[in-house]
Image (cartoon, rainbow, N blue to C red; front, side, top):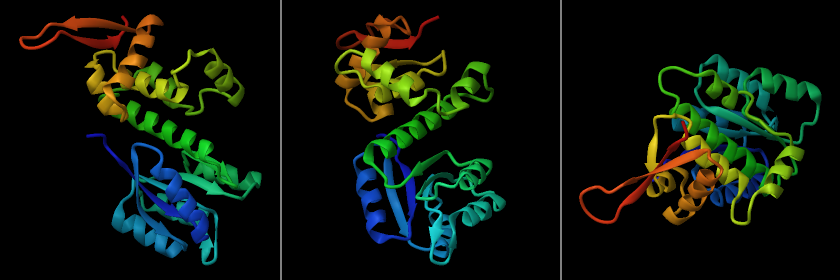
Length: 233
């Protein structure tokens, strides 16, 4: 079963919060565990629900989202934060970055931008979990910065991929093999990224063709032989 990351939506406008909730329902790997419309409620919900991720606005009737973020950091709350805000001031972005936000998304929110941010978050968490007790420089370079491509480079990359290969899903598959010791079947990869075995195998065979992965056949003791994939040495 695919692990679901819990999200708290902290947004003062109920209609916008509902739009965010519906967008998140369309993205695999996440579940909304709460919605708050004030900074006070958001603080209480973070304390009680312990979400993995908070989608946080800046402007609230009872306070400021950046003040709440400072409070969470001072209390050593482990939740990650993506700002979703209409605040376009450079100072707001600078402070949010200093406080360690994962992303900063401007309103009006569009689905594609939120999906991109959440899929990058999935990749980041997957890479962190597979890193083991010690980091390599390659993994550090992969994790920081999280934005590894400009939007222009991303579009060029997508245009060069064959039909049926989505760049975001491809990055998710690559993150599964961040650890060179990992050897997985298509079914196992599908479970990890939240897709079918058939979809996972299509991406795996593409990466084999690109010589990023290698495939070994495991004949086992019962049933049909199965291909296991690993990072190419």
